Length: 304
Image (cartoon, rainbow, N blue to C red):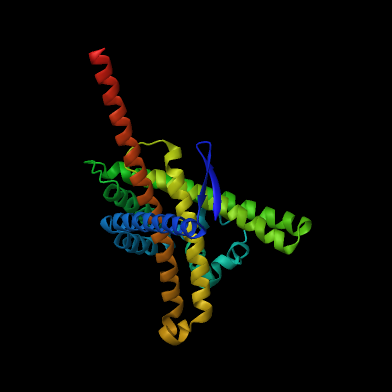
């Protein structure tokens, strides 16, 4: 028997009744969580998140070598050691192929012709151009005659991304030099991941703003950015565990490196698209709420 005080009186509840109430409350919360998750999954399905992620992975693959070419061309002379960044465990499963791409891109910059520079510049912007087009589908917003404007925006974004990567690489190289002398190995790894997380947050937040086909407040894109980073963390950890407990080489043979790289990119792109779709839903609700408030304000002024 459990006694509780309500409305100035002491009421006695049998222990069994308390357990029953707690069980009912827990089940109701679980049902609510299930309905919420089902609603979000239905939203992702309607927006065709896997199809969009696969499409963007294709354009990422088509753009990764030209993008690496421009990174090597613009920041190749800086004292940056790419191997230091790729030595982090988060890149362990794709380190070899990324180093190969970086090496081939660096070789291509030697004696590059004007035609090669122009074509690689155009190819480098394809990913960002298609991201913006995907944003029009996600946000259900279809502006007309903006192809050139979007292409120029993709070029500006490319410059910002290259500059951000250059700053991050320099900061990482300088930080590794300082951290290795001041911190233990464990804390040095924590500092490295903190820097990588900060840069990842900025880039994902920037891409979320770019992919939105209309103007919106910058803070509205933060929740989806956080969701993307959380999804990436889970995906990378899960993918690393999968590679350790499975025999990918036996399954795919000589193509295992390429298959692993494609799966890695696909998981990251799915996480990015999920965050964008979450932002689109949130922004849509905010805009509808603002429209209703403005309508009420107009009606109040009209009848006052």
